[in-house]
Length: 455
Image 1 (cartoon, rainbow, N blue to C red):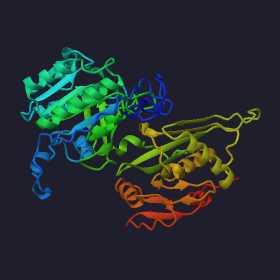
Image 2: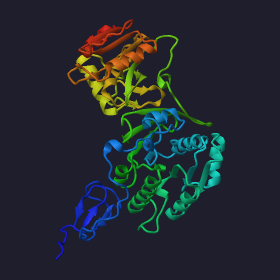
Image 3: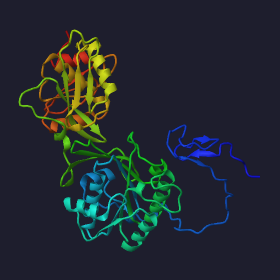
Image 4: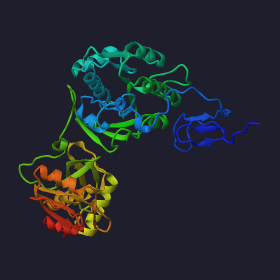
């Protein structure tokens, strides 16, 4: 007798079990992911057909898996050299961030080398894609466009064009008659993505899938989608900023902590090889409330400027001072402000504090704490910091300055761009010829070094 499952329904996202069907998973809160578990099948012991003969690992041919550059340098940097035949790459990002523009540029660069490319759009018509291609100068005879929403039709186009690069924009818009539910559902996305990946790996076709994201920024669809692809790229950027970052979350062919920088404009998207200037501003005279730090995006050091504005105290504020941040983590900012007042005697209670980053960059790493504290103290006292100073360090609740990683790389980048002085945590033990590096162990000590002290 077959064993009866105690909980016959299971979430396809996280594996949560339930005795009855529910529309929303009780564990991961995903909608439409709870499905009935099929009866277990008896395992077959009959040998199956062998698709590829087992080979000693030293005799495996590596030429077929060599990466080919895309022609977009920052994307190649993130991918680890370029596109690998048979690889499945998932590119996710918010609507309007520039995913389609970037992949259309990649398609045009690849087609310009006489490599057939098939671009399948499930959201736009072929004429709409052609208009964008004209605008960014991405028209090539080897770039084929198709507007389809059916998996069977997409497979027919693959058989006809025989591309070496296939772009699906997006996987949530393609449906299959063999799967239940509407396109974009958990079952449909799993079936469509699995079928396309199998076909592309059998034919050594590089597959680029565009994926949607949910409100909280995570990739929409089943979690299985991220597991079955080889590379997961997250495309980030503010809608009102020209800067775009592409970050590798998973990469079977290279480092998973690389970041690429792009600039989005009316004429397309271009690689930014040295993006530091986008996150700092030049002032003719020293201005109170500004401090430069060096953040690490993946393994790339980037100079970023933090600006702060502290209003005058009011007699009848009743403690309702405003704390407004942009580009910074609000929780870490509130903690740093509390440490600044209690451990360094900088009076900001009852005063409105506004803190922001230049250029729209988002900084969440603790290494920016010291620069934030110095910027706020500078604004509160009305005293400008030296223009050639960078500050790097994590601020603890006791007012101590903690060590951070990559100090040498950060300071080398700051020195390359003309900064001559640096405040770093005690024990960093970094020396750079021509740069004055001051180690500080406490926040009040750092303020004294820049001639700012509490009342």
